[in-house]
Image (cartoon, rainbow, N blue to C red):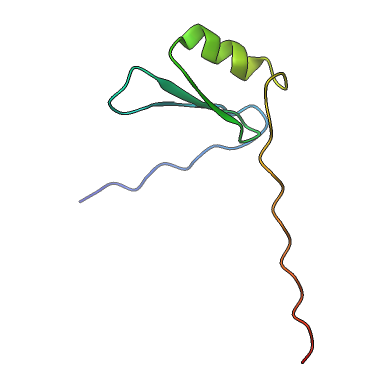
Length: 70
């Protein structure tokens, strides 16, 4: 039996760090959805905590178009 995954946190101060499998690199994900890979954990944290310097937020979702009347 596989246990249920714990809930995922979100918010303005949630940062994620993932190990890139098969490498010595780390992927940082900011709360604004900007991502970047690093080899040095110190540089990674400086980038994450130095928001917004060097960050490019994810593009806003495009609202769906209303269907034209036929």
